[in-house]
Image (cartoon, rainbow, N blue to C red; front, side, top):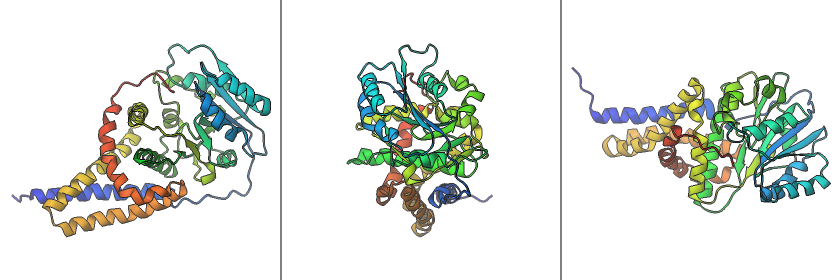
Length: 373
């Protein structure tokens, strides 16, 4: 009976992790890196309702809401802001903005919804109050990257399109934490945008997301996920998106930018809350995400062990075969999503993901918290 040396098994395991990642980068992630917008023979202008939920967001509303209200859009538009039981000066700031911007529609909520945790109740109210079929969702702490954000997002709608996914990034700041936050956000977007381009949409982010009001009403809103505090964006899209009804917008003028967390603790709490919804994804999505997670998690530990105990030339060769295409695809994708300043650090940031997964893996089984703000 032939015995396989443990060093061979180590090399095979490392090679498998590298090849799995290479497959994801070349088959999925390259779709974002080499994305080319398809020009439509005719561009239809759809009336758009921007929907924003806010709770104690007076500073963010004063800072960011004018960027939404000043969008250059020739068709009908409105901005619906749901002021959800705020106790700060949000009400007065909104009233002041209303004097200048007549297309601002303010919805004041003064009671909490019973048995519906999180953001779903105020968002549902805002959607029902919206006057237009095309809904464009963002957050109070977000600002569009340009005055053409609304135009670019609605251009993706075709006859069968019901959902449009965009990218919501974070502002550039000094420091390591900012780079880690932005890389993780980019890395997540690289996955959900590329999967959608491959015909397997699985999530969107509420910082930059659009769908039809009819889709929301026809499926009884968030009724099937009301018991889950989070998920008003990713679980809703996971349930209803398919390769026929979902489009993607990758355009520097169609991004939104948010204010990133400034402390490790606040960021860890935010990400832990977000990851509690992943266990509710469809089986195919969990399999694809899980396989990639395992390969990425194991790659650098196995690389270190293989370089120590195996033929280093063979190990280095496999690593280069994986890292070179990864470098090219990340450079192109980061440029598309206006995150190219992260590229010189991509190997270190890629290594960081090992520790990132260690921190957040337990959140997959954690009970969700009930606050959304």
